[in-house]
Image (cartoon, rainbow, N blue to C red; front, side, top):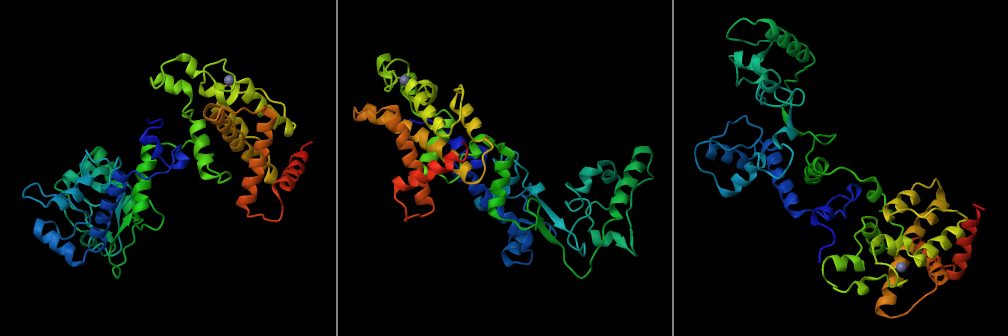
Length: 385
Ligand SMILES: [Zn+2]
């Protein structure tokens, strides 16, 4: 039974997912690496062989398929990253740009080197008038000026575009001693890492989720943090979920095991059941905090994690959230599967015990016993009184 969609699981943790890599996208990111190698290792034998075999322009920075002729399956797969049907989401071709130095390997109109797109896209009118459509930058630069040629005089808007282009070109400084090179646009140093190609897909496909992203604090054991993530997403497998999926067919079997009065919905089990409410109240009394029971677990989490505590107090306060949710879930399971029952105050004590255990384990504190540590926590909590 799937309770969370794979698409949600494969999101970054800061985007509300579990951070599991999506293999299909990772494969595309690995294919993108070949685009990088193709432009970066221009002198490599394999690049020359490919260009020779498929009749590609010797100056091209990036792979492309010629309209005529057949290609190998591997080469087609690599080039397909550029196709509109690619699941890469963003344009791989626009993700690279030429770093111009000597200008000997970069085409003035065709390649992306000045700004975010090729000059032929920025100035389509000028490009259509140009008689040097495939010229290299170094060829146009003579005696410190730009030797641009057009098939006729310019009028009105064309003149304005030309002035704009000239202003941009004034900022360009060539270095004849250094060859041009390829840059990846999305990293500060221009170097291509596979993880950046993957991250770019994530960035353009999903937005950040502050609440779910803030749950990963490494405060509680991983399985507890994952459970808290499911609880805040309202995806824990309660009996009402089983009922809605026809996995149980008697409504009496879908009642809350802690009170046997109401349907075991997510909100009831974790908040509104009088038993659960009592447990939260015990923990909040321990903190000397008066509260109004929120409507939902996401609302509770929102309130809990924007509390204004600092330092050790904040640490213990936040860990209480995980420990309380987890303890409620365990006592619920114990009631169902082991037919055992507990009082709310016993669960409250278990919550504090778990908080003490997790902090001791995280910082590898062996000197104090759990009971001694609970007294220490009491001291932390009393700072507020
Ligand atoms: Zn109940």
